[in-house]
Length: 422
Image 1 (spheres, helix red, strand yellow):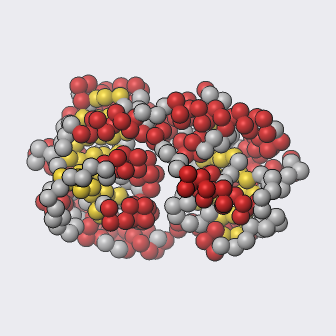
Image 2 (cartoon, one colour):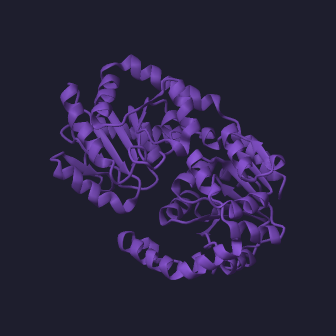
Image 3 (cartoon, one colour):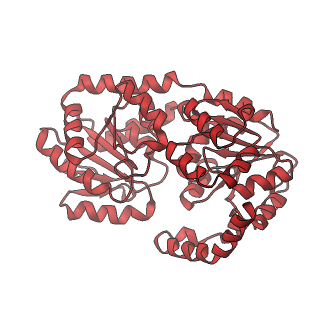
């Protein structure tokens, strides 16, 4: 089955290159460093133990950051971090600089993976969440390189997709050396697909081990001062929005303005940089007074929308806000990470699509910290209730913070699991 899979991938390679070109038209960074995607990475010359950590993009990298920082404390470890997107690449480099080696992950073609492994010589491969590739895992198994899944999660939807290709999925999961998974439901789905129970360990979600140091808190407080002038103006953030979500969010803002006497500021943060311009244009077509964060334009009282068109500042934006809506959820995308705003003690709103973060979402809903909205009308009413009732806002924010504090500890378990294999 893997032979057929590989043949199909080779035949599809011209289409993959066309897709890269098409994406480069919207995001020029996709035109760079193509050789790395085919395994042509610089030879890594080091006497240290090489650990290869694969994270898909920004979200996975930020989720793995507590583990990365723990690994960087090991003097004999050299981290090689791979991503598949330019935004992920930018975030790795901006956050860690030359403390790690960053390259794009090789395509899951036998020769590309072999070339990459020969040039990097990893002692162990760590895979974040669900980025499982048959040829990559098989190539590591052949070379006796342990493959450890960390922070593993598997939604019911993804499990059904894997099940359709059981002949490919089962051998791949059986080759995993170990898997640290977030919850019992994830463990059961992985094992039903072929993962050995002996290889499976419940570690929890390392995203809960996020730490907000004093420097981050001070910068967030300064940012809020810039946005509100030290006043009581309510700030709500709509974070990580996708195409198809900005319109209903702006409609909710318009309706909210009719429901409350306050003068709310919307901080609208698109998930992908290539959408910054179009989202700004959309706001202005709605006749909303709009400024862009990247231009450092002043946020006066008459400004209605601030477009967060910078990279690496989302955590600060949460800290400067009163209420957080997390996107990727009004469309069937499965949602995005709710832990960051929860760690700031913010009351949370989101759309109904939560399959990528089902366990986190469930915990927050049961705690009374998260409310789901399907329409602009529902979102506007929920925002109005929070803005008009400071006590409700406080209680829901405290509930969100309690969930994050109560679920810490996954980092220690994950680090203990990983250390067995280098």
